[in-house]
Length: 259
Image (cartoon, rainbow, N blue to C red; front, side, top):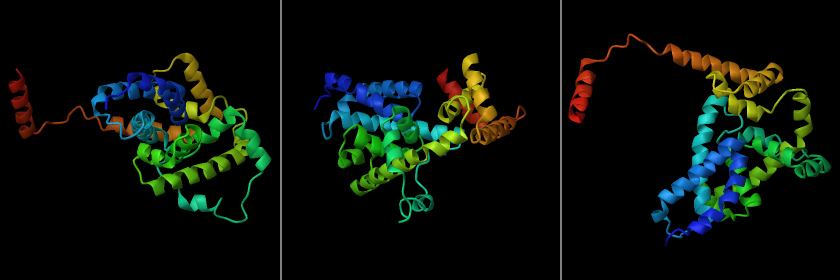
């Protein structure tokens, strides 16, 4: 079955909505562009076993997983962990005495910024599942196809994603109080911090990162760890490294064959 290019183009808005819940605005656009590029390059592999939307979201999901793993290594991974800690989860919904202020949750859920902030604090796999199911209207089997997991696992991720989202919405006030007066959002600062270290940010973005790190109660330890790890890697660069003779011979053979 040939891929319908018009159908592909029609899925771009949905792909962008999904991408924006998984990454920052600029990276979301890059993810969509790369998804479309890969889909076009692999058009002959599309067999129609799933809907075009499911196939495209699977490509984007895989790209986002790779990207999240890279960011996790840079930013500490608290926003993008691959699995929810069961003991932490058990302290909330699993306790019969735990509840939330429903009016507060409803109010925040109706505010786009509050909802995006709460989604950003969900572990990646649950955020992806609940957005695919509840925002993009996919069925649980389609979510399973996108994430390449079994149906039971997909249903569990949707269920936990919803619970975790309510938990995040319920705790919004406390989080805002802790971050009151902090310039910029943690997500924005953590996305920019690697380029900040490399001196690749424009002055405006540099100020955002610096002002955020000067006040934020949670990001400075991540930044300090990043600086330390980066410096340690730099010390691994040894200008006096000696190439073993056997390796030198192999390289010489390769270069000679290429001439």
